[in-house]
Picture 1 (cartoon, rainbow, N blue to C red):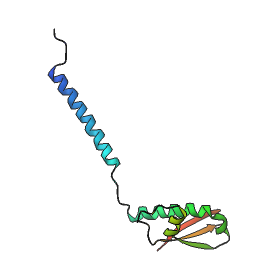
Picture 2: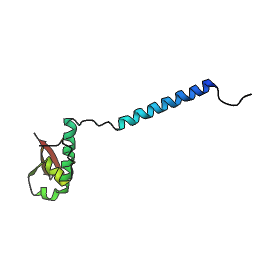
Picture 3: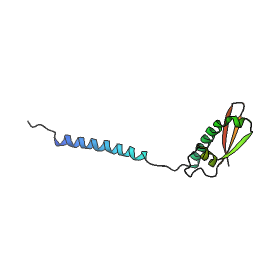
Picture 4: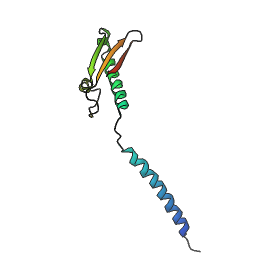
Length: 108
C-alpha cells in the first residue's frame, strides 16, 4: 500500500485554504478603507473636543457666563487635529453651576 494523500484530499485542503485566505484578505482590506466623515460625525467630534477643552479651563469658565471658541482655537490648543474638516466652526462653552459641568455647543 502506498503512503500519501489522494487527489480528492488534496483538493479539499486547497479549497479550505483558499476560503480561509479569501476571508482574511477581505477583512484586512476593509481595515485600510478611509471614509469621509459626514457633517454629523464632524459636529460630534467638535463638541467632544470642545467639552474636553472646557473641562481643562473649568475654573476660568466659572467666572464667565459663556466663552466662544473657534475650531482653530481647539487645533492650536492641541485638542483637535487639523484634517481640513473642522474649518470655520464656532462653539459656545458654558459652565452649569447646578451640575458643576461644562457644556459645549456649536453655534450655527
